[in-house]
Length: 345
Image (cartoon, rainbow, N blue to C red; front, side, top):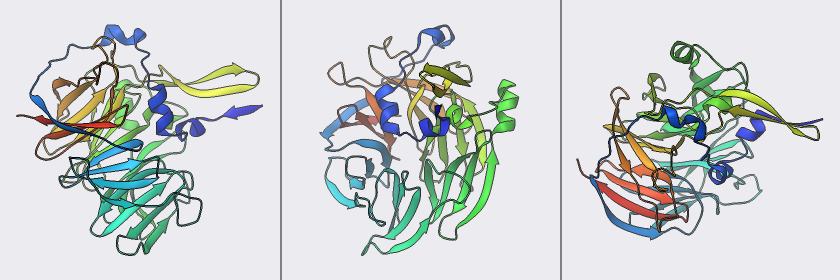
């Protein structure tokens, strides 16, 4: 018998997630709360990116793109002018097979190859390797740079789901924070297996090193502080039941490890010094394929209002978001066009 394990499905890549991205909304419509919409944003400009964006990051008033087509970190301005590329695709030890995360900071750049399970820190000048990090006790999936050489990542052994802060240069763990008690207190239930499927998600960071982690398929997000600890856990505006692991017999000896309900709830997220922004996938058809950004107070995670992000040509949906300290919201669409909107306070 061949089993497709939950870990395999979880690590099968974000591009597949985007292709399959939910849209199974019928069984949760009765739980949708009423949103308060504001139209306090205007389009500034747009440009076409020649690549495959799997992550968009605002970095000191410029953009950083993780490009799955070239396995490179791409730095560019808000007009689409590329001024730096880091990393090289390939199978050699110093090359990248599947870039899933990257960052540029203080003369260094960092790349995480999910297939090879290798995190490298290199100098911008000459590509000299400062360190190579591989975890000894668990698979790395997604992460975010906290400070030079220090990262926050998710950790799961199937049952536990934690936020792990580690020093990649020193090759040591700093702390590991469990979410179990918070989940039990909120829902009175916790998955007995496949926790990584229930709580999978992605990070974003602001200029104060505050980090938001939103779950893709659970209506939850966490605010982490600059030490990697949890400041709070909050629910998104939509009242979504906590999904639970499910084993589905696909016939022919194949068992799929999945969750139910299996709905891609939170599509992307970003954070500035005042707000958390979460791109919601709920009831896309109701909003005529315009996805919605729900805005929350960074101090406590309380819902404030929503922005209805227009689809391009009535077909191309928004898939990634990033925001600058000046309120410039950058949105990536399915055709890899990037549109900048200015949010007015």
